[in-house]
Length: 141
Image (cartoon, rainbow, N blue to C red):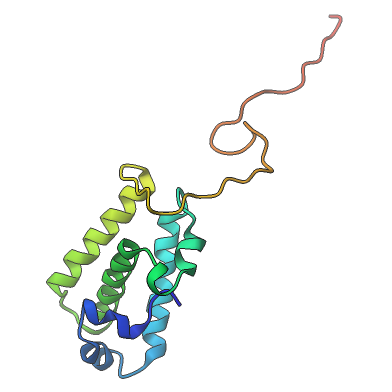
């Protein structure tokens, strides 16, 4: 798994996470999976998100790991309290802004693996713009 519950200790106390989730690790794992899915949607436009999130240990991208932790802690705190934790909310907003900038291309990250292009697609037949036109038929009229 890309992120384990005990690794959240860098952004929150594990005892607080345990208290919020009533020692139910499945809640934390579900939130981690949901957050990875959220991040995959943003990263999939320009980066190979499957390769990013398949890494473990020291091979993981540190910036992605940091932003994932920020999103997970925010979601855990939101599950429990009516009031927003100001620090968690700030870090969550920064993480979402970072993801949005990567998605739009406003910010690039050369250390992330680029998206692999599909070699089977013919040029000009996929994407936002299609080149070419219909077959011309000549008539005698």
